Image (cartoon, rainbow, N blue to C red):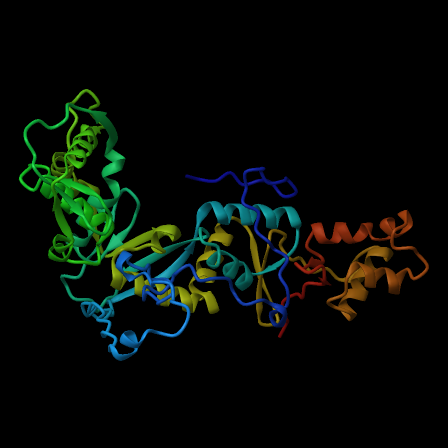
Length: 432
């Protein structure tokens, strides 16, 4: 959707995102903030402790004789399955400005009437967690059967159709079905024993009840995804306790059902039936492509491990030198009728087109300012007053009147005011 652009001098809307345009010199900059892309290697500190891994409080005082003689059993750690190395994908990753952030940035440039370094503006957006889009394209030398798959709901991407189907099923069932809890009649029959998880205390019901397998699968997925199903089964005990049977019956009355949003009058479904019905719609919710564009937030949480690492590596490089972002912004700024020029080796952007004028072609007070800035580029308003009007108090009305020609010159592009308040006269094309 096209964003409304304010006229020069018009203030931005109150809903705009305000970006800090007060850049500082390169040597004074702080290092960039925390990366949007974390390494997925789990550290010891970040890894959650398991319930059977709690350390007992240390006993005070010397050990008893029998404890001193008894050798300590070796602690066995559960071996982790080896993780496959990250594949290097035949893709190119580049970055584009997010349209609302870019429109807000353009309005602020219009309002300030100053010139800003293009690379600093690009760096501002690439370090904004919502300031950019990620473009991923298959390389020309990619295998003929290589495809990217994109979700039409959230614009997430994957390198295989199977992974995309899993993504849609896991992430977007709630977009099409409303989840509700209802009370039903308690299970009837005689249940001599109840299966219970030793670690969590969760009641799974009688092992011969039809809901047992579903409850076990839910426990595995929600609490112990790092374990196998057989390992979870080893921690299940059957308890013969009438009070627990009654507790399970009461808990079983609360059932979760799913209602299709497109057909609210239809019969509510349990989870398995809702997933089976939703699975028939999944092919319509993703598509294969050679190029995808992903919002920044979605790119920071990609589930496809290989694709995530490709984007992460490209972002780290772009964060140091935002080349692809600056190229995209250059084209967008020209389309939005901003002007780019070079001062030294740095590209700047402004909404006022630089327009050189010769001092001798102007009136005396304007010629005086132009001549001074030609000889002293990089001066500020304070320097102008100190040199041209040393007797005036900078806070006085006379000083403001003396600087009035400066505003007129900046409005017409005869003088460029940079982001840091320094002033310069634009240079005309060199004549050979």
